Image (tube, rainbow, N blue to C red; front, side, top):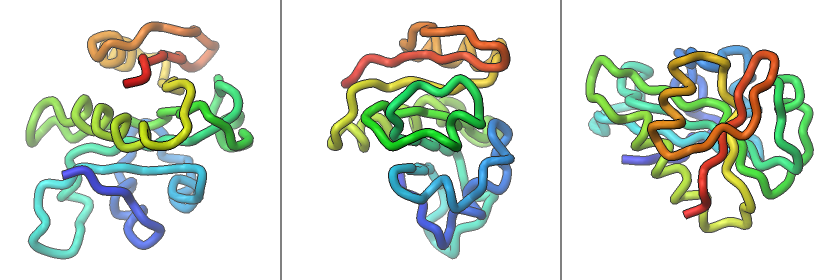
Length: 150
């Protein structure tokens, strides 16, 4: 089930973020930023081990090419997906699921583009190309991929 993170639970959700561990927890949920997550066990208080996948999004006016540009960007209509990760040990396909559900969730607000700020890795390249994105730009340390609006 897709859920929107809050300032009360963001640390538990992003504690194990392998993509952008240096981004402050509070920044991830301070508007205009969103963090969505999938969790498999709703029967008790949320634990980091319950998280299947996470997707963090910032709404910005420009397409960042570095984490510094991301953190210092101005609010805008570009949805920047800067963290997408899943714990592949439990159930496969959760990264794709959280990305698609997060896109659907933010489609209700005024967004003109869906663009990633992805690590410059083969894993990120395969993930986004296999999920329908096109490579927009190759930067020194990152990739920007673009998804079509739903």
